[in-house]
Image (cartoon, rainbow, N blue to C red; front, side):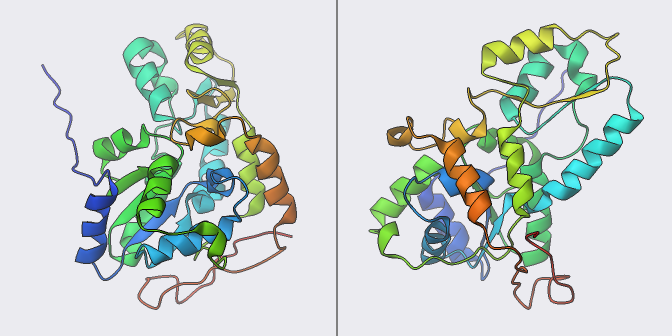
Length: 276
């Protein structure tokens, strides 16, 4: 029996994403948490302002769903007497299924953070959602599961800004419409292994009889998502970990998300976005 995988059509370049924006009264961005260090020397809020100049009516941090994701993972660990492999990295997910099928049962059986946020956001805003992040493989994940209507890397976004004549340094910073608790960003610094070779070695060490209850965060890019292949090449030598830590430490204590009136659920209840 041959399994045929469904591929969803998504926008994968600025020209296609412009059409999404033009065709809908509301177009939104799910912004990967590493955006705070994707453009070194640029205040994160200026990136948000630039996205609004491009025509996006709503910008949310993908990491808003991480508290829910972490709680789900905690329950998985409590109910499993075996490893639990994160599904955050699409390349690692593919590696497990293609090269280590015996470990596929250890993969988290739930939408990834990107898929979870994009699907929920699409339902709330009633329009297309574009994921923007540091990983080029996220486009293939979106094609496979249909969670996002478009995907761009940060390097592609930088070219779009340049082509539109947007100078980030001249923009006033603005807040995203929904901001994740700052403590969840620490998870970007937490990983078990990174790089394809280390991931393979770890996965090879697992067997069907492994009974160690442990959560495994394996990321294909050396150094993790902060150093993803969709980051700007000219900033490859930048210490993004230090930028992220500074951003977490300098964040304001508490704000609440802003929401459009037509976003179901958001107008009726506030969402706590930062913690003291």
